[in-house]
Length: 625
Image (tube, rainbow, N blue to C red; front, top):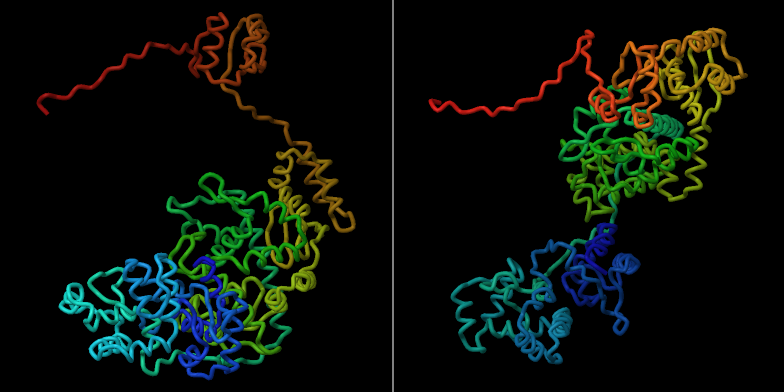
């Protein structure tokens, strides 16, 4: 198991489990359970210690030795957990950098097998030093001066750097007190600073008098207050509906005008504020919805801009409950904390991203653990629980409080929590029960509406969430005026013309509107508007041309139109004496001349445009300058 995997598993430990793991990390090759219990200040068979060891075993971080159940073996916890007790590095680390001859000497003095395998010697010596009884026996036999130095290192800084003593050690006889400790691995030359000695953590933990590590097995009990469950669920349902509307509105706006990305990455404050005005939201919401959309694959990068992805179109086709379930899946474990405002551009990560996923899931579990009808009295209680349940990533309650506040605000926006209590959505999400979650969402979010109520004042009202096809039809032919529990559109001459410009004829548009209308009824004013504009649409047409050809010789123009080599000009007769070309003047002139004709360029006022050869001249410097 590599260190990244160990760290990931350790991040899920509660405070007492982490405290046990920290004591275990002091001895890389394992610990006797009685030594572990002594360090924690409990009996070896204490049920709280047994429960913590069982949790570490289930996580794959520690387990009983198969040959000696009294020993607890571990993965390389010493490489991951910071030593908060002031001891040195584990013997395995320090010994790795010692020469083979010194390792052989240590193994011999400790009564262990001596060989030439460097790595095996490191393990053998590390296992010997993990035996606190052996370390204490060696200490008892040590010369008095060495005992004094080792006790000083065990209770204080684990480094010894007296230059005179070290010089004497390097040049003196083996019988010197420090040499005695070095030859038994109780002290080693420091791996990084050769002019110092280090005491391995195994030795320090065995020799420090009355060493006690913390073992906090009583969870904090944050104060709670009564809440109205119905009110909490209604707030959650309203937030869930607003979440869907916000995502759709924001991404449709990004689809109309893709949002530029800063050179350094992310979306800047100016663009965030602009989007907030356009969708009638706050900056906080825009940052959050952009991140949620990104984590769910609903947006992507188009050149140097952010725009909806093809997945967004697929997502729009889902029922509202399935849409929100999709968002919740991506949000719940997303490694991002967009609402921890610290001046970052939107869609740019922070140092808290890695811990946010673990703490978000933990926060949902904390909310779910509250008794029915109760909510946390405030954010401080939630932060305290996060610090207890996930101390490695949360730190203490004060450290985690800003992140806890940001994550709680996310819960509110997603409809997972309200009044510091869980909604039915939050309870299903915390339980990991997708069927229950979808069922609850369907109860809160009715199926998408397929019909629209058309009114005589040219407005169209959809009660609930419009289906993707209905929203597309109304967005094509009308202007949206409001969103939310009910959405409103208004038909105008401009909006109807927009539908015609997109290729929809008047009869087709009316047929589609009638098919979607409640009762198939289309008000007369709307029929008149569509019919009148349909008759006028296209009466005047605008065509893009590169230039025109003019000649009084209509026969010549007719001949030019028939020349095969000039087909790429796409010549079209606008009048008996005028042809249009799809290419610009210079390209058209060149093509005509290549075909053997002798055309001339013409100014807008009808005079010949003269083509004089360009004469380029370089500027010279004034010698007086």
